[in-house]
Every structure is written in C-alpha cells, then in structure tokens.
Length: 206
Image (cartoon, rainbow, N blue to C red; front, side, top):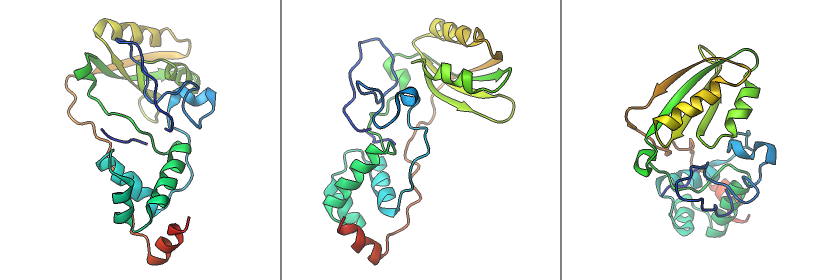
C-alpha cells in the first residue's frame, strides 16, 4: 500500500468496471467539478521541509504511524496530523493502493501520441473525461498530446483509439502498445532538506 499525492474514502465500483481512482461522491475533494476528472494537476501551494518529510515517509510506507514520522522529523504528532490533513485538503497528497493493471485483468495498455489541428486543450479536456485514460499530457515536439490508456483487452483498446480518431480536432494518432510493465514506482521523494532547530520549534507549536 502506498500513499500518493485525497481526503475522503473512495467509493467502490462494480466488478469489471475501470474507473479513475480517488473519487468521492462529488468528484475529487477540494477540486472544482469541471476539473475533478483530471486528478491532481492544478499547481499547488508551496510546501516546506516538514511537509516534504511527511510525503517521503508515506511514499516509503503508506501505513507509517504519525508518531514515528513525528519522531523522525523532530516535531509533535499533532503537527504531523495537522500537516497531513492540510496536504490532503490542498490536493497535494492522495491515499491509494498502487496496482499492476495486468494483474487485475487489464490486458491492453498503450501510450497514444496525438496530433491536433489547433490548440490541444479541447481534445485533452474530452479525453480526460474517459475512464480508460489514465494520464493526459499536453506536450511539445512530435505530438501535441500523450495519452496513456488502460483497457480490458485489445478490442477495447481499438474502440478507444477509434474514438480518439473520430474527434473533430484530431489530425492523426500513433499508438505504442505496452508489451511488459517493467517499472511503476511513486517514491521519487520530495527534495527534503532537514528543518533547522528554529523551524522545528516553530512547527511544533502549530
């Protein structure tokens, strides 16, 4: 179990359905409804060394007790609890189980490069609403968009890529079918620096 960059418990979905993770009954907590389907993509507030230390600890072990995190950072457990709540409320930290899609029966994954006739945002907004689209990225270079798709099988993948091709502003697509998932980690860290004694003393009274 890992804790990634939400707040409320997620809802279960029907067996066999693929939905983007980290939903509540009103979309993603703390995010306006028009961007709720896009995940944590809005630029967040600045975080300090204690925030980053909490994030790194939870990336290493999503079930790490707040008491141990507090001891490692030199602050109180109450500070860690308050900071954790704030990170979740600000949509900087999310809690989810990271899975291997192949192990769950999703046999077709692909990265799709898309070229558009004009600004790519309209196409990106449309595809971001689809449950099969795990990531949607506006890029510079050969493609205007990169979209990662996770589908139950190749027939479903073909259906989704055909839907992409049918969008008005899409000029062309190129699909890169995944043969094997080789690495999928979310422990890149948060560029932590140790808080000074003065910072720790200030944080301990929050």
